[in-house]
Length: 386
Image 1 (cartoon, one colour):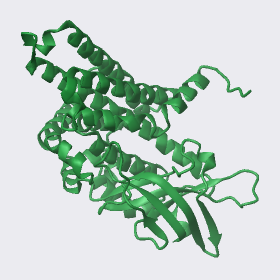
Image 2 (spheres, one colour):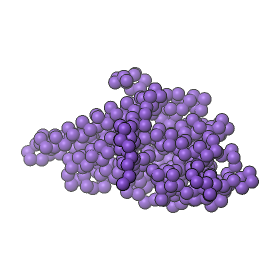
Image 3 (cartoon, one colour):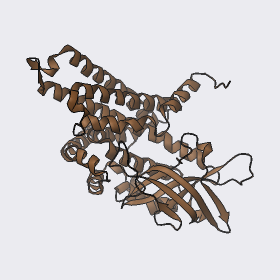
Image 4 (cartoon, helix red, strand yellow):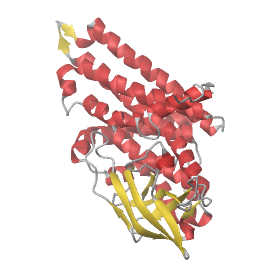
């Protein structure tokens, strides 16, 4: 692994950083208050090329990798994790389609996703089942030449904007009497008969990201809407989640760096006890702790992204990155809030928003407990039940 970025990688990082600080950071607080996906800002971000980074040139992409995508997403999340998450979900879903979709599906849907004209979502989670995908109940049954989907998905990002294109939906396709469930992944375009998007959630964080429940009532789909092979969809969904773990870890890394930025700036400016706040040793200790956590998270996240591009990343590598980065980002936000004192508790303080935003990162794309279980199993610790 190379620890120094290439000239092109540094240029990409700097370009997105400058845009994020000039265009995103100044409006992030208002976006949080408005709780609405910023379509215009997303299009501006896409015009920089961010949404095209990891895709093949034939679809309008840059032909780069997970690592370069992480470099860019980190800078967006440093200013606003909500926008970074909406962006990364669309990229991850698009990559899942690029890997497993038919040529016809890719030709029809990928160019708009890669260019950022449209966004897309992946829908696995249901009200009663998330990490336990075996517990999903949304089903699709073949009726002649038509698949009819029934059920509900919950907390689906990017599903209800004015530029939402499609959702990749996992559904049970095995017979009701089958001893074991099998699942198929379907591409469900917005506007499909029987597919409705529920009311936007009122969330604790990620307020400007778009999140809705999805309802399927005899939703009619043709065999052409199947992604990959029939009854093999659960594996495809998990592979999509695995890719997303690197990107979500990156979003937490960017947020943690943002916490460090704000803590250092405030400590230099705030006057207390006859000097600056940053001159107090206990404040210095808290900021130093944030710095160490950020640097360590960057190492594990960059390693996971680099190994993914080399085809060397194991489930453990991805889980370590996701587990550590998402957990320490909350720790960094807490410490940064403490540095800011009473102001840190106010909604107009960025680190207050950072604390709210990152809380979901330890739950989504496999909770911290699931990541710890994967790591423990890789170390040879068997699951036991009493």
